Amino acid sequence: MRAARWDGSRLRVADAPVPEPGPGEVLIEVRAVGVNQLERQVMAGAPLGPGVLLPRTIGLDPAGVVVACGPGVPDRVGARVAVKPNVPCGGCGACTAGREADCPAQTVVGIHRDGGAAEYVVVPSRVAFDVGRLPFAQAAAAVHSVPIALHMIRRSGRGVPRKVLVTGATGALGCAAVQVAAALGAEVTAGALEGEPIGDLPGLGASEVVTYPREGAGAALEKALDGSSPALVLDATGSGELISAALRCVAWAGAVVVAAALPDSAVELDTRAFYTRRITLYGCAAADYADVRDGLDLVARGLVRPPVAAELPLEEVGAAFEMAGRRDHLGKVMLVTKEEPTCP
Ligand SMILES: [Zn+2]
Image (cartoon, rainbow, N blue to C red; front, side, top):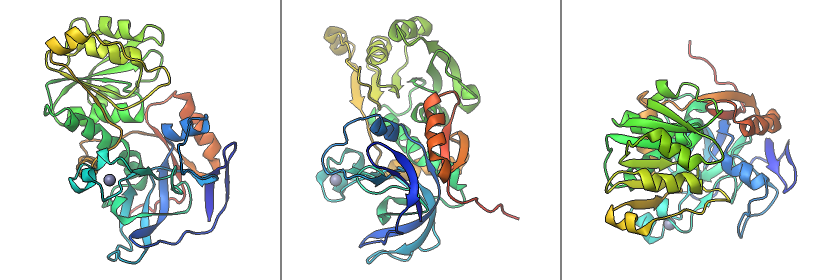
């Protein structure tokens, strides 16, 4: 089969053997997979941590059709599925309590095991979620970001407040957060870097779009909010400046949920204001199984529709990463391995 392999210095599409599903695993014929920020960071030299072997087939969030099942898996052949990128261990306290997002031993498809930027991928059956009739590119574009966006809101433990601010709204996660919060009834202010294309963020649910420059982003955000205090801030930037500003702007007893990191991510915290105003700050890097099921349900019902900026063939993986890196579009860049037949 053809597979996009990263060897530590080069990304290229090469021949590789079709993997075989082991116990508890399924073999998926991949139809679409996203180009993700995490892979771009890894290729830019971000540390991989222990146990990561190269070369590795990339591709965090493939969608496709189950074509074989390993021992112990009920027959799922023919199921249309999308893969949750974070694989929880299944045995720790968090996993057994249904809080898979907090599993300390989770691994990531495409990082710790071969991913889905290939014609076939093997994953544990438990992270291959049924997507019904959703088009594969849409399912793959949704399966990573939408559940995490939903988890960010749920993690805050505040239900869905009326006013929500999303910073980094032009990225895949930020855009999903805008849509999920709006679909759940919030009035959403979308924050974006000046000059980044906001596309149809208003059509996707943003009541208002505010922008900030790269330098002095925090002060500019505060000014743009003009005294308006969101009860919940969902940050998809990891920018220390923006998170510091969010902690200053958030409403009394509000929450800031951070689901990204930048090298320059030190946050300034006025502890007096933090405790007297009962602010809560959360970190969020994955989703629970329940978030995946419910997130995909929002997509299936048409309440959330993650934009797809482009669909490129697997062989053009280099061009796809280049395009994703330019950030001159709203929506996710997808790799497709096989055209989906259109229904008659
Ligand atoms: Zn676990």
